[in-house]
Amino acid sequence: MTTEEYGKAYQKGFNLTVRFLVSRGLSYDAALDTAQAAWAKGWERREQLRDPNLVLTWTNSIALNIHRTFLRREPQTQTLPELQAPPRMNVAAIDVKRILNECKPNDRVVLEGHYIEGYKVQEIARQHGWSETAVRIRLLRARRSVERRLSRPKHARLRSLAEKTKKALAGALEVSALESAKVA
Image (cartoon, rainbow, N blue to C red; front, side, top):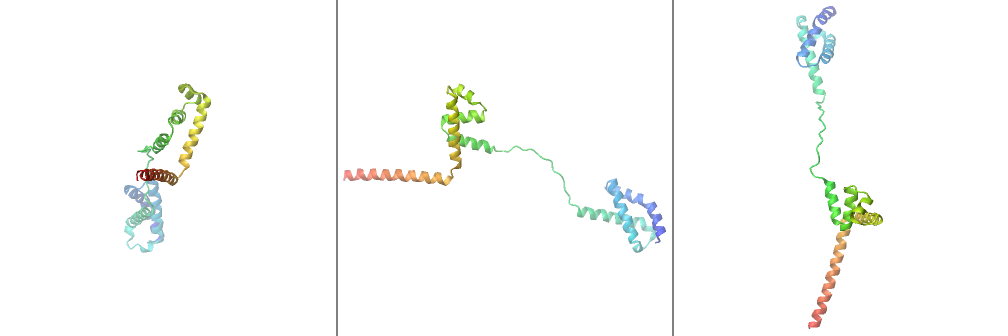
């Protein structure tokens, strides 16, 4: 096939190749680019064309192969919408409940009133008949107490409990030994 024959085939067949690609699902812009690439590749390899009457079919198959190669190489990504799903468990509420359960009753009242319900020191004092200074001091001490409990590792608590248990058992054993000595 000569260059003039290929040029004439290009002028007649380019729009047909674009329509062919659009019918295969490509957008018009993508079909234009792919058809141009197919006709350029056909130009480079026109000596491989055996039957000049099949130049349009040959170029369309080149275009389809270019499109398939593009699809294989391009990762199929799909943007997923952001779904706002509330947590099933409110972990913060569980922690707050645990902390408040460990507090003294008056400390609990002050902490709940100030931090959870949002009352000011003056309002808490007025509700409970306390002075503002007493509420501020109780709030300060309650915060420090909670902070100490939270910063203390669990093992230290267990060791402390074990030591108290040992002392209690040792005391109970001494008392029972003294009572058995008196009986004997």
